[in-house]
Image 1 (cartoon, rainbow, N blue to C red):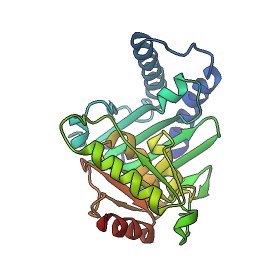
Image 2: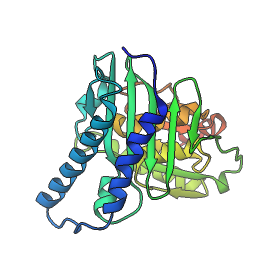
Image 3: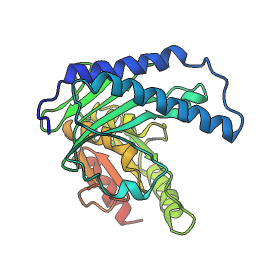
Image 4: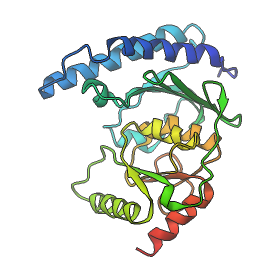
Length: 268
């Protein structure tokens, strides 16, 4: 195990590959078939992972790499047995990138003993680098993040998300529909933005007031969860219990807003 985290080296590696993608943004044809889509997604994963490995393996030669495949539901239920490992979501929002739409980031997390120790989310279009280290706060471009302090729900921005968990044999679609209805009826502004991790970082930055999701999406959440937590957000399930790896829902906001949401949910 390597105890020291060289934050500038990690941030530089993430920025480097993010800017490579930025240079090529909107240069490729939008995929028109499933084969084209899968090929371009594979190319994104390959480029991102190879660049990060090249830049970080010299500093951390003994830390293995894991790709966060959000389509693999079962693998998201438990962390790896490795003491330390990199968990790389090569591009959160890759579909937006391929469709020539804003809302894509490079996400990387260092997991230690089954919990995120360090995470970074880089938004190349905005040139914003969000990062956090467990117990040491969350930052964006060197500035300490602060949660929203709104108390008026009519001016709160709430976001809902959904993932790739199979919804054909459970009540998840119904839960998601009820969630959206509750948000629309009780919060002034409701959106579904796209990149899960960035939205969670935005909770930490006070740009989003509430994030809620009703299915399992650990890999898309993990980098943003640490950033939101270190900024002071409550990290819960939608039943109000503390979130843990493998939880099948997520509720993130400052404490008073989570309490309002859970109260709303209990009467609907």
